[in-house]
Amino acid sequence: MAEPNRQDWTDTLANQSRVQSLFSRYEKNPIFTPEQWPYPTSSVFNPGAAEVNGETLLLVRVEDLRGFSHLTAARSKDGKTDWRIDPQPTLISEREHQEEQWGLEDPRIVWLEDRQEYAITYVSFSPGGPLVTLATTKDFRTFEKYGPLVPPEDKDASLFPRCFQGRYGLIHRPIIRGEAHIWISFSPDLKHWGDHRVLLPTRPGWWDGRRVGLGTQPIETPEGWLIIYHGVRATGSGSIYRVGLALLDLEEPCKIIRRSDEWVFGPQAPYERVGDVDDVVFPTGAVLDRKTNELRVYYGAADDLVALVTADMTEILDYLKACPG
Image (tube, rainbow, N blue to C red; front, side, top):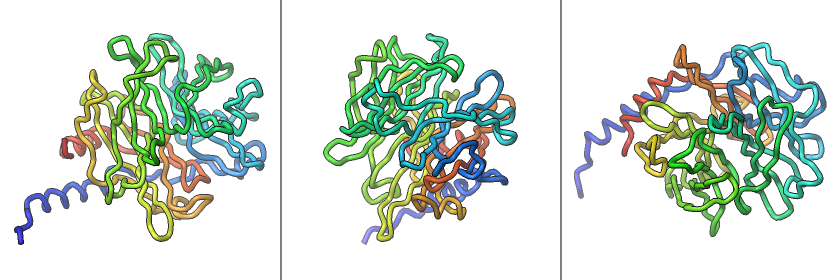
């Protein structure tokens, strides 16, 4: 029998010990519940996040009492307290957009410098299945809808905030032959998409062996594009949604520099373990405070509430540098 590589095991334990302190739950979690919403709702979760006019803006998925979702904006000066929630839905499904017949879900937000506007990718639910859909805005009051970008079934999508050699990049998660990997695609005009390829595959037997999907929007750092993603493991009592990290090359985002072996954040708090869907942490939005280097990650907890974790970006990148290439 081969002798186990004890140095590898020691390195694994060291990395897993670092994981425990990477993310800290906000002490006043959850930050949003259905009870505090300004109008009747079933659940609030999976918000996109952006800095807008010096404030943190969350575009929250709100599920109504019919089971259909829409998006509502909430704003805060510090991204933690004193939230101002729009009194009515901010972005809703419209009859002329057939792909939105069953609602809008799970937005990701980026600022497109070349267009001087925010791009929101979200899931629109059509009778033919979920579609990745695009809308743009300058003020989160009025929106221009572009419709679906790629065919169903597809979810968990975000644009990159800048182009690569004149092409926009899109991370998304199609279901093909029952497989649920993270893909990347490119477009010259936000309408015609090609050069499709698998970016982050599932890892059978691992914590992310059942399916993977993009979490927050890609975050540009000096070391590469930080990708926060969710991974799913199937167990005898149901699926568990946890969070992993990856780092992509700044100029060639198809190139993976690092990927965490371990999950770095998972359902442990009561509001993450029990809800509409048990054992789910589902990050969809993040804001980096460039002055303090604090990364705020907003996530849906058990498909029921909105919660917040924070991390130091330097510690995140130092951890990723120690992960496999």
